[in-house]
Length: 156
Figure 1 (tube, rainbow, N blue to C red):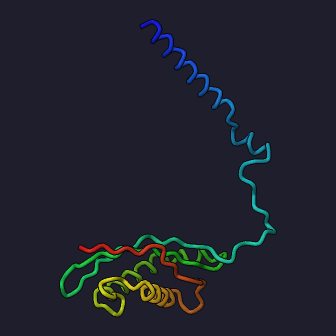
Figure 2 (cartoon, rainbow, N blue to C red):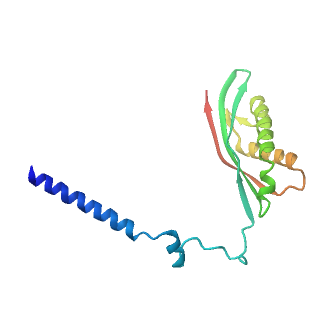
Figure 3 (cartoon, rainbow, N blue to C red):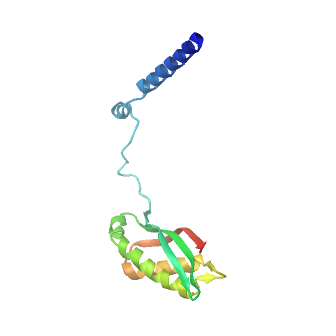
């Protein structure tokens, strides 16, 4: 019994010292920055990427046909915009999401070539989303590409 308590005490002591030494060796953010590490500010003369990306909220749509509710389609859309135009396009995000939902809701239920053998045609969906984006933002918009990250179907 006494031997077990002694071993447990040594074990707790080793853990305590190890934890203390680990925390003692971790540098504070200020000390790390002084050493030249940490968050380095970007070079203002460095070239920026050509595009920025806007991640839209996921869209979930029911597919309602003459047979009733048949399946649910979920998709994640990302917009590829010109560098520096992200804030300008993000202001249109609610309108874009609403337009996407309205267009796809009717198109999926009525067919319109979006379903082939009960499977969503990704190419057609992407073309429709691109067309809707052009209508909402106008001809001079700065969206380069509409990207489909995820498209999931779930039969009900």
